[in-house]
Amino acid sequence: MQIESPDSDALAMRASLDAHFEVTDGLVCESEPQVPALFISDMDSTMIGQECIDELADFAGLKDRIADITERAMQGELDFEQALRERVGLLEGLSVEAIDQCLAGRIQPMPGSKVLVQTLKKLGCRTVLVTGGFHHFADPVAEWLGFEEVVGNRLEVADRKLTGGLVGGIVDSSVKKGTLLSIMAELAEGATSLATGDGANDIPMLEAATYGIAYHAKPKARAAANGWINRGDLTSVLRLLGIPEKDWVRD
Image (cartoon, rainbow, N blue to C red):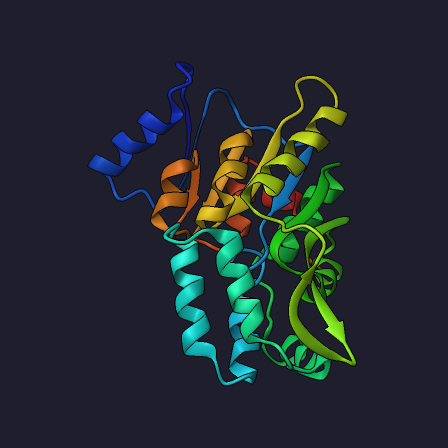
């Protein structure tokens, strides 16, 4: 469902809809949606169906402990960087081979993700995968789906084992938003942007985008977005943008 909100109060409109209807998939915007110049997306539980760090934790026998930290961070109850460093520290000693096995055996694209990315690319959209997760996963996922650029965190490895540390700066909510804004500054005036995500770490990015769509999201992320998908798969994003199925790329 698309609703135009000329008074620019998209969030108030969404709140009113929530109060009176069970709207499963929707987008509230100031004018008729158009194909965005930029598509930027979170990875874990958005472009893929898993939280990579939780799956890695399972290999280390720590899934319950790490998954609890992940859930609290996604809900916005914990500082993201602190929670990330704590979880990565618990993975010290895990082998690179375990990462490869996890990627091959457990990580699956979210339904509709490849159609979404490939269709937007065909229509001239720049595509960027930006994640608080790790390049060990994000680079292959980007290749599977067709993202042109990847921004993510890097696990430190020594002697083919995780050290429990990270290399370089942390990709957190401010980096996600900053990536969107810096790319938009390079594009033509009036260009629009699309962001998808599901957790508290995605909120600034969702708020900064022309179309910020919360995908099967945590309550805080959904409340911050002007678009939401609670029922459909990622092809619902194309429907919300008004892109007809005849233009979708399916291969």
